[in-house]
Length: 314
Length: 210
Image 1 (cartoon, rainbow over the protein chains, first blue to last red):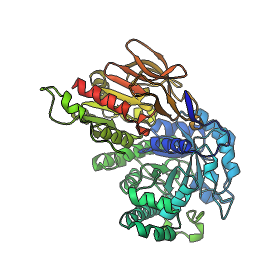
Image 2: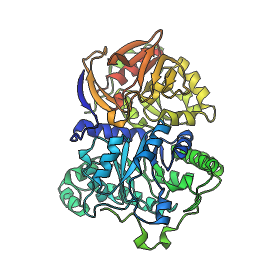
Image 3: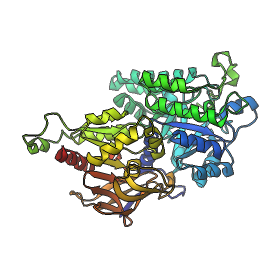
């Protein structure tokens, strides 16, 4: 049997087959909810509630925001504990540009790496060269140009940045609408106009051309950053998100305290169900009624711009 | 390179055959259901996304796609969906890929979990490892037309098969594409390749049984 490609954990250069496998896993997560967890117990709650994957973290974004300090990759020991506790894919975050953290995450075998603005950036200029990895990457974006720059670097999935750790969906909405509007704007351009569009979006011409022809990103497009309720999940799905990340919204009651495991499980189940039935108001009403509370949250409009995580990266 | 809808089907219709095109459901709880819907269109069938048990009455066959089998199960536990689906798969053509194959199996291991129990097989979840062990291979198959590309993503393994299971392709001595009467199952993702032979075989199975 000819082995066209087999990932083996070596530092293999990217090939078309590797890219297909990376995007293939992203395809399998569509329509689902990826939940932030900080320990094995939370990971099990997430899996039992129907999460398609978990993001293994030392602290959820709301805690990072409240406690300050330098936020880094989670300890491999903690990530391994979570990997051993569940059968669903496990993701973990590395700092923007911190390819050595990414090498560690690939070595311990996480299924997806999130090069995330939630952690303190390690490089002010460069993101990780994601083609150099066998493990797929997801990256945040606020508009089409940013999404395509990350895809050019090898990202296999894009998520909106939103404003993580706030429980305020407003910027997840803003970024999803922006990406969708940018994509639509390309579809009406003539072939000769795409070169200038590439310049304006500061993105590679070939990717601009692909979006102009298909009207969508060449990789799955998910939403993250402030989703806290079943209706929030349905909102971003209706706006075009193919799946949702829920960070602090499930396990936190405010920026410092965890919700009870029972409450977290109820929220998790309701958000999972709302994500599948995103266009069915009758079921959304049921999900919203089941959900007994949401994190207190932090209104993005009242925040000092210097506190925003979304401006990290380019 | 979209091929025109299979013209061969028209000639095969018996006088009793219903006039509507073959309607095949794709379980759309989560996963790559859109890729399957597109593959079905290319194989000459009309896909219907299935999210509620009552929709099962509208279709001639069903695909259970790739995704997370634990997520599927949690969802199916509500509203009597699991019971309706169990009834459906006992009599109507059903094709499961990856997570779908796990759901169809009689027995699931690593870890053990509930299933629809219609395919006489034991299926081991994540048997090849994690994402880093995902692979694309080209291997022999009993399908006409030569070797087949097979995309494995965190793939399960059909560890054992029982009565009535016909093996159409293998990887390292374990079945990866099987048929058992009105049931088909694959541990890989034919919907992620451009070769439509596997989906066409399922569409033919649905046509023969309606």
